[in-house]
Amino acid sequence: MEIRSFDVDRASEAELVGYHHLVVASAAVDAPEVLPLSYDTVLGDLRHPHVAFGPTRHWAAWGTDGLVGFARVGFPGAENTHVAMVEITVLPQQRRRGIGTELLQTVQPALRADGRTLLQGWAVVKGGAGDHWAAALGFECVHTGVRQRLVFAETDQSLWEVDPPPGYRLARWVSEAPEELVASYAHAKGAIRDMPAWAVGYQIPDWTAERMRAEEVATRERGIERRVVVAVCEATGAVVGITEVMLYPHRADQALQGDTAVLAAHRGYGLGRCLKAAMARWLVADKPQLKWVNTSSAVSNSHMLRVNRQIGYHIVRTTIVVEHAIADLESAGGTLPSASG
View 1: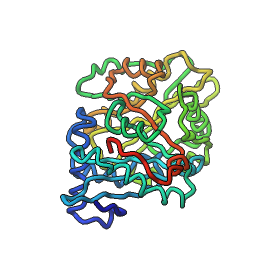
View 2 (view 1 turned 30 degrees about the vertical axis):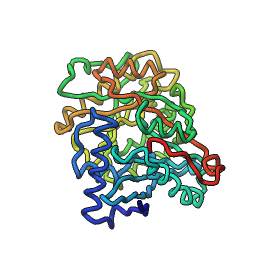
View 3 (view 1 turned 30 degrees about the horizontal axis):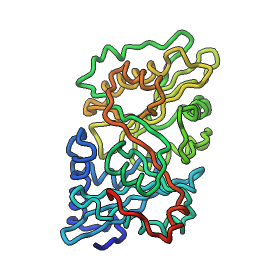
View 4 (view 1 turned 135 degrees about the vertical axis):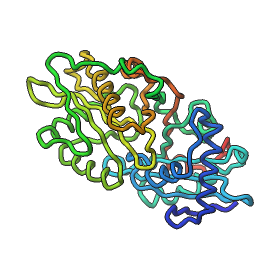
């Protein structure tokens, strides 16, 4: 087996086809409820990872029959320059041969060179091969969540007819917040820090109007459409609740839920349900090609899970976030046990 860096913009067609095969074969075992992913979708995900990842680098493991394993590493910025976000995928029939472990060893020099001290894996399927492999390597589970999906064609859309409570009105926009709302929008977005069971080493950004504007520009430059619905307190004119979705250019049939948050002083009035219901109505009316929205919530966030159920979401699977101090991984001289990877 040979491991070498992988540049998606310079890869050959055969190498990209091999990567597509790897992802589809792994998903069939690890997340069988996922529909077969097209070549364009898989390559789009590689070129346009979740915004939290930051810049990414890739490594591929090659065997005699082609690509057998892949590592994608994200290097977040700002508060999270200590974090490296790692996804390692191994062909199901090639697992338990140490490929994933060797990939993990291979990426560590790049992490050290960039000053990263904490390794994280997100959206690991609970009880799956990745969970067992990470546990064998000493990773700690720091967060448990559920992935939920709202399938428009299977949902009673009358569930979305939810009026704002007295004293509040809704506003919405695409990509750029109105100038008069951007500061309070950023402040309300920060309420996501109250999310239950957030023990993850990844730090939630400290949102300001200036930082929000920079994020809007960066999102647009990546071809991602951010749609936002907010609740405005009529007495103050300030945003007190928000929900966001991201529409990625290579996934025309689905949306990815971003933050949903309500300031503590305005909770208990049904604003979360109202906001998410309004978003669903907007998406169905404005984006007929969309089929569903995917979201994730902490298992302990009973309020958000209830809100999602009320508007038609169903649970797809349970996932975990795992993390490990990079120095501790290296303390054994770089020798790691082989597990399901």
